[in-house]
Image 1 (cartoon, protein in one colour):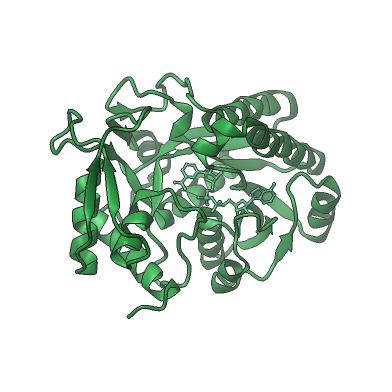
Image 2 (tube, rainbow, N blue to C red; image 1 turned 90 degrees about the horizontal axis):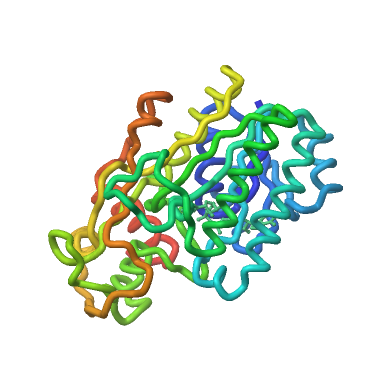
Length: 329
Ligand SMILES: NC(=O)c1ccc[n+]([C@@H]2O[C@H](COP(=O)([O-])OP(=O)(O)OC[C@H]3O[C@@H](n4cnc5c(N)ncnc54)[C@H](O)[C@@H]3O)[C@@H](O)[C@H]2O)c1
């Protein structure tokens, strides 16, 4: 079965395309390489790929003509929260307008299932420590709003055109494929685990903790880190279920367990066996103390469970990848 994977040269898309391939599917990747990497496609063993834009309806028509696509997994988007505040036009154009173009092609081609990378950013300020799918969605930045808009558009497209969707609201994707062949490679990087590992590699002078006086056990913020391969697995389970049952689904995708910034740094030091300076800074505006997603619903409906719930495993896989990428033994 052929699956179109947009953004498949990026971090999560590439791991999912790799897992699709290893699970007997045929991923067909579309990525404009604005943030993606051609090497990732090669290392993931993806042979069917197109370098182009999801907003290009002629290219989409060509891809659908050349491949009998059954479902679409849509990872491509801009995902820098800070940038989205300064350049909302870019975010609404790429994440919303281009997604509508892609959706229109899917409707035209009679695609049965559309899997969408949404985000915990759609929830905005958390009202509860553990976030359920029913939590109010009040995003506080254009990035989060662009994701929520697509969620709403998907519901309307289902009603009007019968296009089923699987909306997955990720918490913090982390780790790398255990093979060390593919991993996280954002530029600029904003995620905690790679930044801490860059400090271990000497690629940055230190790591900063923003806020050490939160009402958490060690005073630093707590986040939910999910292994990228567990995320990939959830996409496949969700797609299969949606195609078989002809229904739409919405799930949080997290570990259901939180780790503090200090814990992440300590585990990184333990795994890398490298010490590096840690600087305590004041809180950053808009950082909620605790953000953890409940994964109960996806466990009950799809039977999904993380294979790598342990932070040490997540970080050791990331470390293997970063060492290899920066050629360090
Ligand atoms: N990384 C996380 O922790 C996280 C958390 C929540 C949600 N998400 C969402 O998951 C998805 C994947 O995130 P990621 O971390 O892999 O990001 P990424 O930047 O590594 O991957 C996105 C890919 O999309 C491509 N792309 C962007 N616009 C495109 C367009 N118009 N046409 C074709 N390709 C285009 C980029 O070149 C890139 O390869 C995004 O939608 C992101 O918003 C990520």
